[in-house]
Length: 194
Image (tube, rainbow, N blue to C red; front, side, top):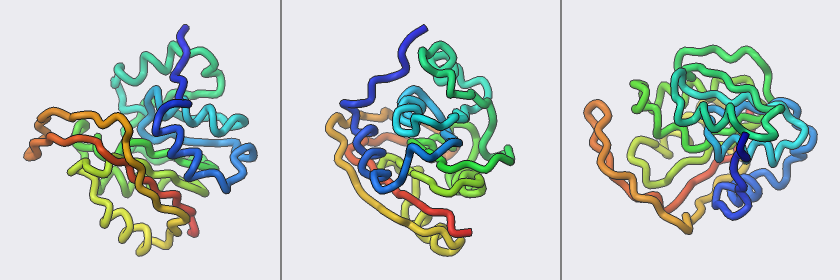
C-alpha cells in the first residue's frame, strides 16, 4: 500500500481551498470525483473528511486505477469504472469535483461538449470545475454560456497561475493535433439551482 498524494504543496490544493472556503465541507457526506486520479482523489479525501468519495475512472484506465486501488487510507474511496458520457449516475451528491477531466474527453473518443453535458447531469448540489486554461479542447465561454442557459449559478470563478508549468507534447486525437503548456488553471464553483 502507498499513500495517495501529499497535495499541500500543489497548486491543485490551493485551488480547492480557495474555491470552497465558504462551504461547510465537513457536512458533505457524498462526493463524486468525475474523472478521478491520484491528485483529485487525494484532494477530495482531504477537503471532505466525512464524505464517501466515488472516484470515476474510464473503464480499463490502469494509469489511474492502480494507484487508487493501492492507496493507504482509501477506505472512504469507491472506485467506479464508468464512461461518464454513457453512464447515468443515479445517486444524489453534495459535491462533484471535475479536476482536469474535460480536456481528456477526446482521449476516450468523446467530445468536450458531450462530456461536459453528462457531468452537469450528475445530481450534485455543487460542482467544482478545474481545468487547464491553455487546453485547446476545453471551451470556457461555452461552459459559462451553458451554465447560464441551464440555470446553474457560478458562485465563484478564478484563474490561478501554475507555478510549475507542464508541456503537453503533440498528441493526435481524431482531427486534433494538440501541443500546449499549462501555465494557468481556471476554476468555477457552481451551485445547482435546478
